[in-house]
Image (cartoon, rainbow, N blue to C red; front, side, top):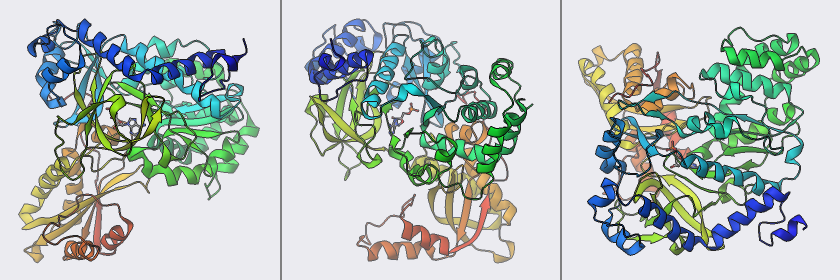
Length: 595
Ligand code: AMP
């Protein structure tokens, strides 16, 4: 049978027989979204009927939606913390899930400054793998010939720890890259990477990045797509090339490996790949020594058809930088996922970033949607609708029930419905709730920023100085990006004002107060630059208010925005800066949890 007659769907025609199956699967799932959701809920509730959690709410093995919704509360991470802590401490009884919790996935969302611990079970790996397996068949519909070359992907693992009860706790991608699903993946011409597993699996971020870049340079003619999970990671890789190209070119010229690469299995693997190539070394050095790096990606990797990188949500701030380095290559946002559960994929991955919509796959978990009213802070949990009942144009918070034992759990993402593929809705990622500042995967909320300012301003007390107003800005014009905090100070004793050194220490004190993901980004991943405090002239924040009022804000309701990114406001603030200060050293960070 001809491949395209297998599938008569809006997603066709597939590139090969294997793709046809994947596209067929997407069609089936999205056509029968409601029935699939019913089945998923039934499976989750039936298999977990004897768990302590479901018994507590007297579900009594019933698995219909109405009973489920009337008895099980909508919860946040904080509500589940006692159960999660017991599991972390070694209680192996079926608390949330009938299947044993295989490990915890550490979310980049934090609770009391520490990464949230998301329980997972072994079979979830299969579900994640299934979603990954759908990505290339969709991409092949839009970009032909991806089997004729390779992908240069900058992929990294992060540190892992053990909970007191002995369960591993690590980020979901670390868990995936270390799994046999990834390490022993069968050869697939559509999914060949330039980075060897040894490079991806090297825990030292410098050695990992260096060798992935080196391999990418060696295979520059084969690279058809270039990516990282998030845009921040790809921008960092380009910055890395800017800083390290002389050594990289030296290694290529001589066929010898930088002595800073000490990981044994990585050295062994690189030894097999490396050979002297003076011509390539001259080319790399010739391009990289130019002052102008505009379009560097397509100059070095001329066959690149698109960047495979998430630029939705907080990552949209990197679009201009990526456009500059790539000469405006398409940026494909292929999937939407979290530690709690992988959600869905983009069925039109070559669309413009502003038009990206993710189709939630109804087989991944049971999904409900809490109507989000942006005018009030509290959405009422009675306003929950099912996947197929969301309405185009409305915004919702995602609420999930997973095979691993989260029931009606609020993820914290706000999504807007843009349309439907068959009966499955498609969502634009609007934002994550309560995130003020984000550079990489860090998420700093208003309360954390407030606490950090309070802690830092304690250093000013002995100078009779206080912070009267502050606001913040995620500056991604520097690479890596960094937090900028604008301070207006009240100095009561001008003869004893705080010195530069004291204000530098305030920067560090703020960093020490920020959550573990921020500090890990500073210390281990080098994905966030030193925090900066800009002291502005007295009266600046009053001018800010005048400006807001001139644009229609009400005087009575005006509140100082704790984060700004509107260009005229930033210009106003920057024009009033009297001094600027940077963190003089790294904050403390270890992989161990503080509690
Ligand atoms: P984590 O908890 O660290 O696994 O991060 C998951 C979160 O990252 C999600 O809940 C979203 O807020 C964000 N995220 C994941 N995928 C995307 C995407 N494609 N676009 C925007 N944000 C995303």
